[in-house]
Amino acid sequence: MIHTGGSCLNPNPPVGPILDAHHFTPDYDDGGGSGLSVLCSAQSSLSPAMSKAALNAKAQIIRLLVPAGKAAPTPPVGPALGARGVKSMDFCKEFNARTAHIEPGVPVPTLITVQPDRSFSFVTKTPPTAYFLKKAAGVEKGTGRPGHDIVGTVSLKHVYEIAKIKATDQHLKHLRLEAIASTIIGTARTIGIRVVP
Image (cartoon, rainbow, N blue to C red):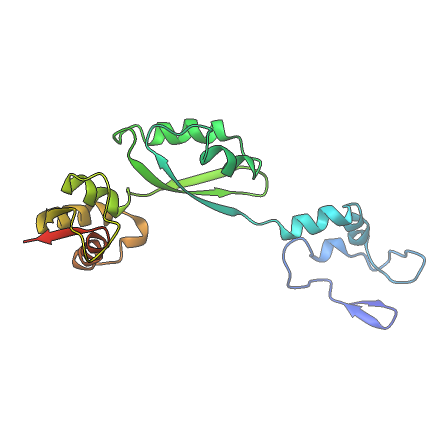
């Protein structure tokens, strides 16, 4: 233990590798008899604003619906990434390359994680359930009055085919196919598509 004028500092505090024993030298004297080490001078080299920003810096998650193979630095991609200091062209090139196997224009839900150093990574998911249902029913839009108007129909076979595709999403892998199909039927009702056997 290092004694500092009535209080004791633990040379091995449990706060991480930055505060270990080699940062403390008991024979160091700053003139006040505190016995603190070079750690204090190393921390004081950071400006107070910068150290607060560094402590508060967290990765940010951006959720976007981007058309496959057609990402461009226009809204919504450009402003969402530009506001966080990320070069949107870098994202667009990588996204378009990763979604080249998907039919161009298909909406792809994308989670972009932006780190404090402005680097990014992203995860793509399968297209929204409503997109698949409208495509299977052959309609452009859902209904404006769910439960009252029917704009199209899909078979139960369509529902299970959509469920198989949706089951590949990481957040749905733990669910049974029947549970996923049940949520798809619920989505069909809300957009005015009837499911027939």
